[in-house]
Length: 156
Image (cartoon, rainbow, N blue to C red):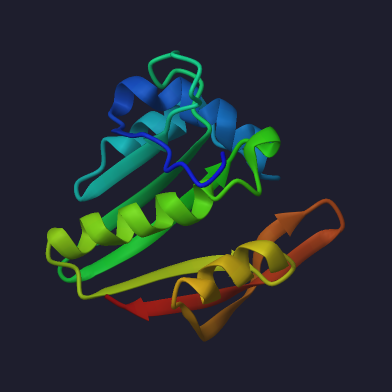
């Protein structure tokens, strides 16, 4: 990407199929299109998608971040980047844009869960100012069993 900031689109339930497909490529326990549509339609939820840069109008996003606002807190529900687009700063840019939007909507704190074995994501969150605030035992499913989630939080 050469340092260029990706273009973001505010996703609506219309983007559910594209987000579900990308979620399937990014995670072990993927969402269906119906689940993605349901999440996108929930009160307080916003989703930013990073354009792939190929003029597809967001139908094949390079990445996405979905957040839910409640009172003065922002929960990062999911963030994912297409495997071929990783290591290009897309996740960092998505996270920064989402936190700026959350602040603009009145959020004072943000939190998320990340699998203890997802070292790359945890490092990204730490780099963006998140710190460990707790653990959820056996939170994520893996082929070999279950792993704990780190709860990470940040003051916005």
